[in-house]
Amino acid sequence: EVQLVESGGGLVQPGRSLKLSCAASGFTFSNYYMAWVRQAPKKGLEWVATISTSGSRTYYPDSVKGRFTISRDNAKSSLYLQMNSLKSEDTATYYCARRLSYNYYFDYWGQGVMVTVSS
Amino acid sequence: EIVLTQSPTTMAASPGEKVTLTCRASSSVSYMHWYQQRSGTSPKLWIYETSKLASGVPNRFSGSGSGTSYSLTINSMETEDAATYYCQQGSSYPPMTFGGGTKLELK
Image (cartoon, rainbow over all chains, first blue to last red; front, side, top):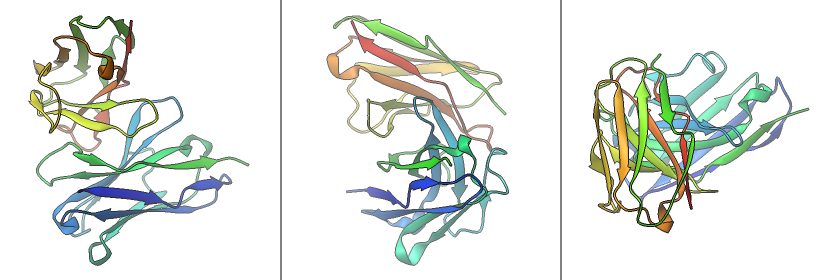
């Protein structure tokens, strides 16, 4: 069974940093692109970052480029999101999601982890 | 960036009623994908590549469309279909974009 379990969320002050993790199981992690998608409270979905199978290629929207870094450890079947210079508008539930390299949709999602940026 | 506009934003349907949700893209896309999100849970892939049902999705659901106009249809509304549905495109990427969602309620 495919499982994606996020961790590392919490309350953080504006301007500070936080690192999210996603533990994957039930599939060959290194065969899949992975991504982070977030959802602000009562709002829609926003794509945050994608990483290639080897980790050599990463992609971000302008809203987080230069502040967030996605990475992965295929030996540990783990995905990460380093978030720096956090802003109140980064407050959201962050989901880890899986996609095949040649498909541009997400076939499995984690349960999500909440990040609150507030003083 | 391709903007996806979903309509209606909210709607209510009675059991047995036919439901159609629409997603319009600001520029032409090759495929549209749809997700269902029930309250308090994470999104689930529902329809991919415009018309293919994800595993476990009932066949009362269907998807269609091309270019800038896509739709998700429920042939006969059931209680369990009450949820928010999001469309998503990856044709023009990055960025990958989502629509604002349609909240479907049971009447």
